[in-house]
View 1 (tube, rainbow, N blue to C red):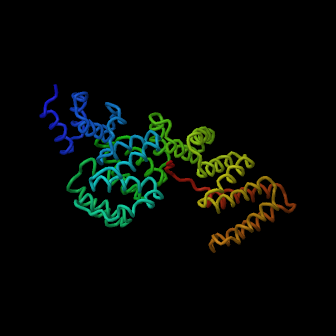
View 2: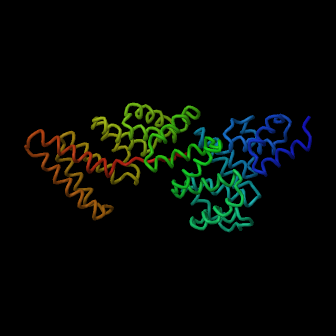
View 3: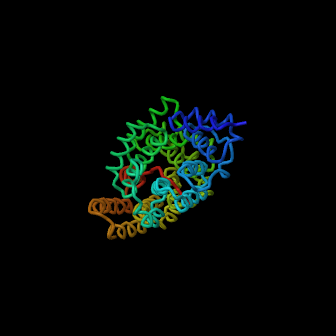
Length: 380
């Protein structure tokens, strides 16, 4: 039978950053532990990369910041509905200021739109600790101060939870160099859990280390086959590596789980690279529902039409894009050059020259400028 001393050993190990010890002790006594201590054990498991000892659903009661950390398991599994519900209910139900701020931090890094909708309701929360202070700075988008305070605090208190905080902040602010160094250190210490591995892949991709990002994502996909983020991002890596049919399989799987203009756009890139211009055009057309792809998709559709010999349509489309309000001077001049090239192609000129000009359009203008692929998080 478990004693009060046994419980205290688990909580003390966690407080002292002996996370593996907390996990180990928790496994020994798990069935006899009260719910609140089981949470501590399961958070420890998450932080060290162990599988849960019990049912996470039964532990989450939306009362503490531990619930937010446990929700990250739902994120990795690709169960975004549970992930969001847990965050939102914890923010609403918890009486603890830190927990509310912690939940808002998680919401901000995963769904800025939803965060913007509800933040005004909680913006008056007062920071009572150093941790609350850097979270408040982060929530108000004062990232410089948030990182400064968090970094100073981390140097004094390198608890795994604090490391998780700063990793999230670096991820959200695009400081991938710092994030990569952090993940590398954790890897050397044998502390690189699946969540940190996921962030590590982002840092690799952003610095052009596609092979490294691919290796991580392939391992994660074996564990989390229903995570649309992993499917999509690995597909992007495969496109970069020229593994086009492998990428197609992943994108089709991702599309079953989540429909998005981003997936359509990436499929357009894929089919363009495969020389399937009609299919590429169809996918770029589907992606037009998003403002994010308004310019690039229209341009790419025109380039597909050029490859299909639809020169008049391509020129008309390019002129419309050139005269649009969202085209800056640099792209205006680039479009003018492209229109001139397409007009030349439409004339009766030697076939070898047509092939050369199309190649120049595809590699020098279209792919280099408007076919850029990036990592992304799709959330429901």
